[in-house]
Length: 211
Image (cartoon, rainbow, N blue to C red; front, side):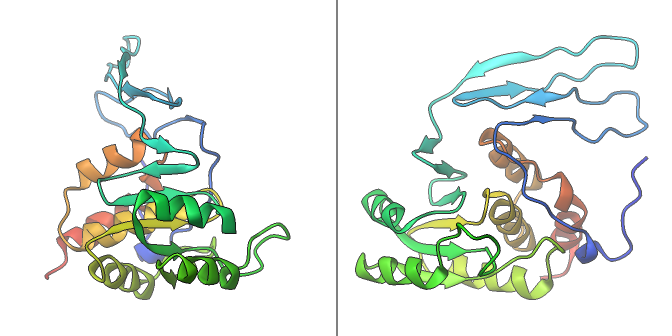
C-alpha cells in the first residue's frame, strides 16, 4: 500500500507527456483500476476488476475538450503546455481574461519569457500573473496565490507550464482548498490527459482543513 508523506507539501510533482499510458496507483484492496491510455477526443471509463478477472474498459466518445494546444477543465478553466506570444492572441479570441504562468523563468532554452507573454497579454487586454512552480513540489503560498488568482476574475482563465501538468495540479489543489468535489476534479483532469494522483494526499488534506 502506498505510504503518504508526513508533510504532503513535500511531495514532488513532475511534468508528464500528454498522451501517455498511465498505470494508476493500485492499493491492497479487493479491486483496482486498470492501466488506461487517454487519447484525443476520447474518454476511457475505468472498469474495476478483481484480482482474478480481466479489466473491463468502455470507450465513450465525447465532444472535443481541446482548442489548439489549450485543454478545457471547466467552462472557465483551461490549461496548456508552454505558450508563445502568438498563442496569446488565440487566448484572446477564446475570451481568456487571465493568463497564469506556472513555469519558473529560464527552465529551458526554448522557453518563451514570462515578460514577453505578459506584454502580449497586456496588448490583448488580458491580465497576466506568475505563480512559478518548480519540480520540487507545491507550497501553501502557491496554493493561496492560485486561489486569489481564481477569485480575481469571473472570466475564463488559462494556466500554463511546460506540459500543463503543474498548472493542472495547482488548480486542483486550489479548488480542493475551497471545497470542490475531489472526484469531479479528478475526472475533469483525466478527461484531458492529466493525473491528479501525485497531489491527491494534499487535496485530501486541504479539503478537510477548516475554512
